[in-house]
Structure formats: C-alpha cells, structure tokens
Amino acid sequence: MHNTMWKLANVIKDYDWGTKTALFELFNITNTNNKPQAEIWMGVHPSGVSTAVDTQGKQIKLDQLIAQNSIQILGDKTKNRYHTLPYLFKVLSAQEPLSIQVHPELSKAKKGYEKENELGIPLDSPKRNYKDPNHKPELVYALTPYWAMNGFRPITEIILLFSSLNIQAIKNEVNELTNNQTDSGLKAFFTSLLKLDDTHKKHALLEFKSKIELLNDIPFNIIKEIAKKFPDDIGLFAPLILNIIQLQPGEAMFLKAQTPHAYLKGTGLEIMASSDNVLRAGLTSKYIDINELIDNTTFHSIPADQLLTQPVKQNNKINFPVPIDDFAFEIIYSDQHLQTEKLQSAEIIFCIEGEITLSTATDSFTIKAGESVFIAYCAGFFDYKGNGVLARASNK
Image (cartoon, rainbow, N blue to C red):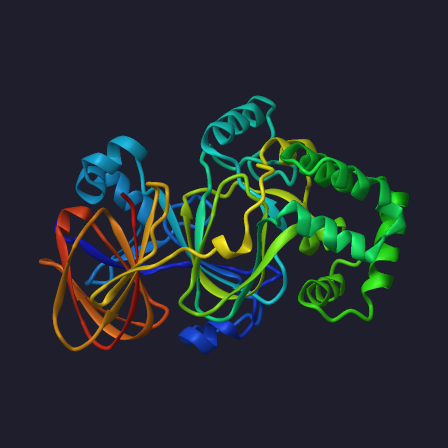
C-alpha cells in the first residue's frame, strides 16, 4: 500500500432527537439543511460507512479500502477474529431523550439475526429487531454535561419512589415487588408495567403525572420534561426504575449488553461494537417487541456510584478501560512537542479541540476540532504535534 493514513468524510445522521446547533458550536460543522444533527458515524457499519480520502484527494469507501487490504490495514489478529473493523465511533448530540433500550449480547444477537432472516423480515423493516449479528456494548464520553439513565436502581430505591407517590392504578404491581425484592421480582415488575393494557396504562399515567406536578426533585423534573414529548408513554416511569446520572465533560460511562439505558440530553463521543441492534422499552414511536426485550435484559441492580468508568492516567494520556476487546478508548492531550504512539490496531483519531498534525511514514494530515483520520495497523506508529485534544479509538 502506498498510503497508511486517510482523512475521513463521515456520515451525519439527522434523527429528530438531535440538536441543530451543538455540532456547529463545538466543531464548526455547518447545518445547511437546518435539521437536527444527532450523530456522526466513523467506521464501516453498513448504515453509515465513512469515506477515506488520501493526501491526493482520492476517495474510497472505508469498507472497500479495508476489504482490498485487510491484512495490512487490520493486522492478522483483528482480521482473523473480526474480519472487519470491529468498532463504530460516533459523536452523539441529543436535545431530546433517546428511546429506552437494551442491546443483545453476542450469542443472542447471532440467533436473533438468523431467525429474522429465516422469517424473511427485510433489514429495513420497522419491525426488525436485529440489523446485524453482533452485540453492542458501548462507552460514552461526555463533551458537555450529559444526562443519561443506565441500569436498574437498587430495588429498595424503586419501591421507595413508587410508594411515596402511592399510585393506586399500579398499587398491586408495586406491592408484588415489595413482597419479592429479587431479580425475578424486578423482572416481573418491569414486565407488568410494559404490558399494562391501554386503559390501565392511561389511568396510571394520568394519576402519576398529577402527583408529580408540584414535585421538583431530579427524577420528577426529568419526567415532566420527557412528558412534553411522550405524554402517554409507559417510559415515563423509567426515571423511577433506572439510575439517573449526569456525566461532566471528561467523564465516561460503560454500558453493558442487556442493560436498559437511555441518553437524555447532551453531546458526547460514543464508541461501541460495530452494531445497530436496538430493543426498545419506551420513549419512542418505533416498534417495541416486549417479549424479545425481556429475553435480552439482565434484571440486576447497579448502584449509581458504580456507573462511571474510572480513568487511568499516564503522562499526557487518559485511558478508559472496558471489559471487552471490540474497542478501546483513550484521550490524548497534545502540545507543540512531537510525540509518537505505537498503533494497537487500525485506529480512528478524532480531534476534540485545537489543531493537530498527525503523521505516519507515508502520510501527514492536519486536523482541527470535528475532523478525524483513519490509520492502518501496518503503519506501526503515528506522530502528533500541535495544541489540542485527541480521542483515540482502537481495538484489542
């Protein structure tokens, strides 16, 4: 190969929950269509493949580039294990809540994908659960204050919150959880709320919204904000069931497979296994398959103080360890001293702040905030110099 590094032209997703100004404010990315800009995708997922541009301006889709030179670009280890780039790197910017969702673990993703293929459900069908045969663990790194829900609260907290409101329409469901404070009890409670019939759900939500109207604590303020867009959605109960967390800029959080979560508001970087499999539980007009969702959910509480990923600092770098091999994530602080990094795999480098020059033995690009490059594993190393901050995506 003549080149070992390429600048990336990335796909921007215009989902309705995105923001119209955040990407411009952070990265000077124009919004010519004045649509909500929700995500920038960096990678080879079929739903949004990046374009690789060499130093001469020649363009090629990143998946095609990798397919033509897979051993050199990915390295033997990644090529043999994953066959392609195993991670998807994103900028995510939310003005409104995303759906409450879980992602399947690997074996269930493969089975679900094969089953829906056998049933002849088109990949673009709104009733398709599995878009690919992969799991989707992910890590989010906050660029602005970033609100999210992640994992079940301790059961005692859930009971206390619901009991304090004394919602008669779901009194039996709360009593059953109170009498069975186990993972199975939590599963039964969560399932019963999702499966309320329309009349029962309507009465429960009307009573619920009436009782929190004058309350100003964090979960209730968030519920009232969500209710402006989803007034009749059973997901309004989620902030009483799931942990609520606000990440400050520079903090990160890992989201395990089969764990319910929802991003509420803010802009961050997100890295995940290369998958788009989503099973929804609420706060959405999209398809909800309750039985499939329940089968792919782990009903185990996570204390809120255990949600943040603890960073490992070394010189000018901050690593955020994750318990899977599909991706790794690191922040690099750059200055005017030339520094060198050994490549761990094929890597995507995104510039968060400033303007930084990156070089391999064959190529050199200067990128500014909002821009990114792709570096082949065969490059061996890259140099960087310039004042700014880089986010580094790789795999193990």
